[in-house]
Image (cartoon, rainbow, N blue to C red; front, side, top):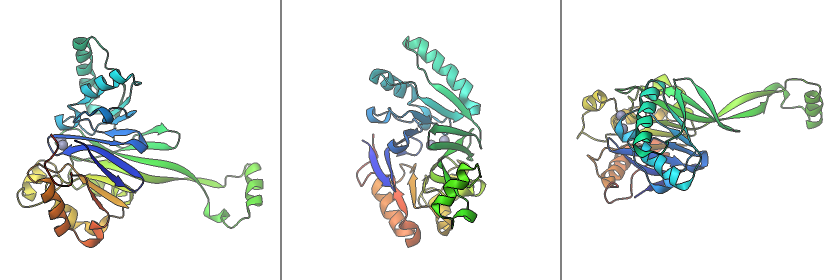
Length: 282
Ligand SMILES: [Zn+2]
Ligand SMILES: [Zn+2]
């Protein structure tokens, strides 16, 4: 049922079929991106990151909370666009009443630019995506202390002495580790250009050929492969994980079409989040 791929140091496990359901678990980051489908082993992440309120991205949230309750797991942090926090929270209060069991989370509404610390060495930043309803993407990064360039030639002993004397020798730099952008126009790469420099970029690619025209794809605020190919040389990522493929194409067609249409420079860094042949899950 689940697809698992590796992208650099990260494992991405879950299911993604555009318009049907998307839930992607990255265990190394303890994050679940979107909650369109529940599976026993997807529910354990401490951080749930919801991109927007369409059912294929939030429909399984109550079920995920149910599995967590069953496993006795602590309440998760639930990040979601600020505009949908209150109505979804109210919905959950009603669901809790129906179940006579509290569906508890730390609800964190986010706006583009907001930053939150997930753990000692890991941060999240929300960025703007462009969809038909309120939506955001998420970029995860580490903050690393780096010696300022003017001090790099100094011997270690002198660095230690200067540091002990209170001199400010270090600067904080961000290592952009992974970003998640779904249900958006390709314009997201212009409004958040750092996505192109993030180590692993998980990006939607709902449509891959003429069975869905570019105009129809844009009208639904989705990305078409044609638009990714136009920008093929812009991607500086170690890996670009394409997902949210429409079921118009079979998994086989996704692999074959992408292999045929992508230039080598892009193909080398692409990871396709689709089963190896067969049918889409479910
Ligand atoms: Zn979707
Ligand atoms: Zn959507």
